Amino acid sequence: MKSITVFCGSSFGSDDIFKEQAFLLGQTLAKQDIQLIYGGADVGLMGAVADGALHENGKVIGILPHFLQSKEIAYKNLSELILVETMHERKTKMNDLCDGVIVLPGGYGTLEEFFEMITWAQLGLHKKPIGILNIDGFYDDLISLVQNMVDKGFLKQINRDMLLISENIDELLEKMRNYQAPTVGKWISKDKV
Image 1 (cartoon, rainbow, N blue to C red):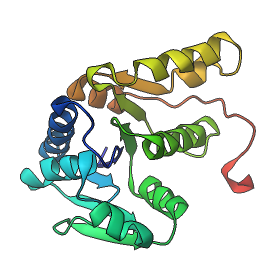
Image 2 (image 1 turned 180 degrees about the horizontal axis):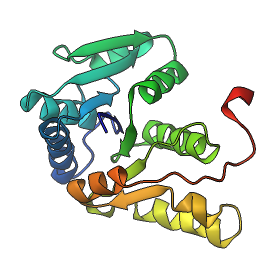
Image 3 (image 1 turned 135 degrees about the vertical axis):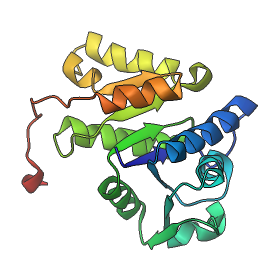
Image 4 (image 1 turned 180 degrees about the vertical axis):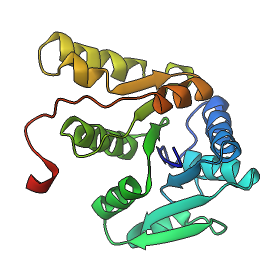
């Protein structure tokens, strides 16, 4: 993996551990010579993960829609800041530039980004590993919900198993390196989208 997209909140949350782990993730990626792709902002966990990578002289590419420049405050010292028109264009560009995805704590936007990427993987539009860094059990309820989807017949176990989860950065990165995408697609091919 040469580059990883990180989806995360534009706030810090209620516990210092979220900021600490975001910063540590950025540091770890830079130390392992993995380029960070993220939302381009200088606020919340988004800023913390970029800070961590830049602290270790890592390469950081931010993707930010023009209309969010004033709300999310573009990070000034990135390796590269790419401005796009729409949120969908942002996610598409982040997907195009990365070899995998890590999801940190966040709100609706983070979940929307995560679910779109895992849906694309389920449909066979990409074969990239998608990991949740489950800091302080933040995603425990979501993980239970996903298992309930399997138990109730709305999701296949093979698609549930596409989701890589750990509370430990190094363990999560190792799972991502060893990931093999399912060979069974859902219903469509990329050229049909």
